[in-house]
Amino acid sequence: MKTLLTGGAGYIGSHTAVAMLEAGHEVAVVDNYYNSSPEAIRRVEQITGKSVTLYEADAADKEKMREILKAEMPDCIIHFAGLKAVGESVAKPTEYYRNNIDTTLTLLEVMKELGLTNFVFSSSATVYGEDNVPPFLETMPKGACTNPYGWTKWMQEQILRDAEFASNDTLSVVLLRYFNPVGAHESGMIGEDPQGIPNNLMPYISQVAVGRRDHLTVFGDDYDTPDGTCRRDYIHVMDLAEGHVRAAEYAVSHKGTEVFNLGTGNPYSVLDMVNAFSKACGHQVKYEIGPRRAGDVQDSWANADKAKAVLHWEAKRGIDEICRDAWKWQSNNPQGYGE
Ligand code: NAD
Ligand code: WQD
Image 1 (cartoon, protein in one colour):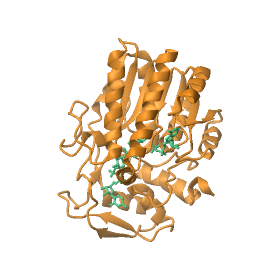
Image 2 (image 1 turned 180 degrees about the horizontal axis):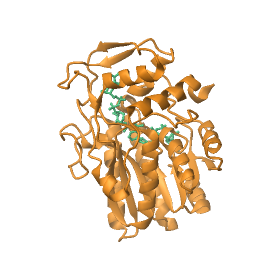
Image 3 (image 1 turned 135 degrees about the horizontal axis):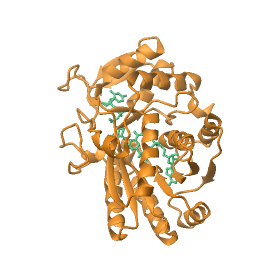
């Protein structure tokens, strides 16, 4: 199968490129390097010994995307390109709506012109909102999001459903709701490389462990959980990547819209992750308890039964592998790709 990955130089896209190539599929990548580096794709090629066709372009640029998609005519497009920082989306909502929604509309319009039919989308568990109670099931109603980033995912899901509905059984749309993607490829050659101060837990812990930051602040220990800290469904990025291979294979052989949670189904607390990482790196990761972070939900984890039943996929790696691989990436590349 020929795949085209928008945002394929980013964290999840680069790991998915490895999994796709290893499954015997072809990969082309479109990225504008807003939050990534072409070095990630060079490393994907080193890991796999296979080549990737790389285009530097804005996925919202219709002329450019027409040219690229005409040249590639992929069997399946996987749309990772997007802005993803929750806090920044509150400060810059129009940039988030413009980039995330425009890229999706452009792709749908050009796909229609060229007769391309299969689309896999990076959605998020954030669309379950605050009122659903975990484990989250695909059949639950979407909830109200707590920030513009979340709303862009909510809206893109709706746009894709509407486009598929109007296509008279031509389009195939797979909406993948990721839980908390973490970890790195087991080689330690590619991983998450956040710009500036990390917003997310695992890159923050990694940077404390490697000495780039003094300590982690744990956002609240007064939640109604066994150790008082929030619980999440942390999924190894290579498990997530392999889920995309199954989802793309499913997309090309079905029509309609399907939603899948990609999570493990197992919740872990913030302190569980600090302890697992401390074990993996061989020293205690320093932390202090701070106040709750605005917008955090206490608990979020998946019911992952549908992906297992329909895609024949389930997460195989646990938090020890997650921390081992994240540490390998961070300790081998203390400044990420920027060295
Ligand atoms: P990332 O920032 O590492 O990757 C996104 C990539 O898209 C980057 O390489 C960036 O340069 C590129 N990009 C952004 N706008 C673009 C545009 N207009 N044209 C071309 N390229 C563009 O993020 P990620 O963690 O790999 O996330 C990938 C997707 O998964 C995103 O859509 C994100 O919202 C979604 N997602 C991520 C998480 C997470 O926790 N990482 C969770 C749920 C969903
Ligand atoms: C995990 C836990 C924090 C940092 C976000 C987005 C979500 C999705 C994934 C894209 C929480 C705690 C964190 C720190 C801490 N992205 N924490 N100290 O908030 O579950 O999800 O990323 O779709 O939309 O909201 O992930 O990694 O930020 O936080 O104590 O310095 O770690 O309070 O309990 P979150 P996270």
